[in-house]
Image (cartoon, rainbow, N blue to C red; front, side, top):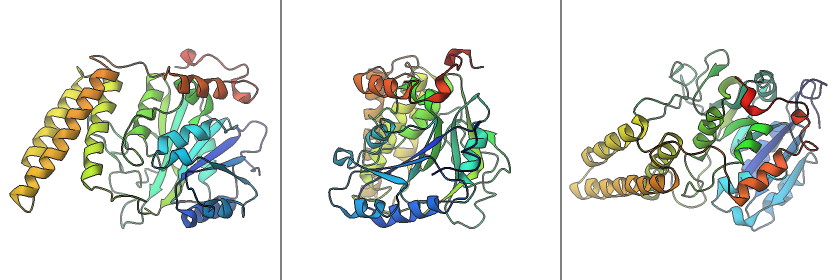
Length: 344
């Protein structure tokens, strides 16, 4: 498995990690799209939390892909991503959701962007099949606003690679050394599948002094498969979304920051004043969202503090990931490379 551009002497090797749980047909479509690329990755890892053999059987049809069973990853996408890091060998590590289909040129877009050594992380264009999405929000892609809100618009096409504050977990890539320095992803963002764990990684990359970029040529279609349990935007999702966003801002900027204080104040107002079909429904939703904000405030105070927390993960899991990813024997790009602190 190699690729014209990615296989050239000066180009980095690329590992692709696909996390899945009981969605074998989507895995098949994703792997088919990777197999059809003109420039293909050096390694594909499918981290499978399923307890049946359906996904294993699908992966066996693709000799270039490695099936990694991980039943403890059911409903824990970030933990599964970290498991993938312990198997990855590439100098660039890309992540695709199992319900994405890569466009031809996807890998070239990634490799080209990482040719700039100041780039530590990349978000790729993630299309949803909606009319006009390529132009919608083209000036607002992946921004962190002063009041702590995030913009998305990851289906937009700005026509060239741009700097952003954060990206989308369905289609993202990182320099191996940078993920090693971070100690992998923080996996305490709760809820099935988690929310904001991808944003957290991008913000931590920036905290190390690296650029985060958005590449419109590193494009995929996002099919939006249903969750195995629950529904997107149900009460459970809303609680965890509010809790995780508060934790994200508190840990990366501090609970004393304008980002955190502005977002909490505005989120509480929105939760209390939002119009619903009945007063009971309005009260129930206000309770769910306010409880999530309160839980996030408590978590942020415990895990962060008044000021921003250290971006590097220092627990045993983080140290294990760091040891693997920064091992020069498995990361050729680390040999002779400058310390991360020297990157401007």
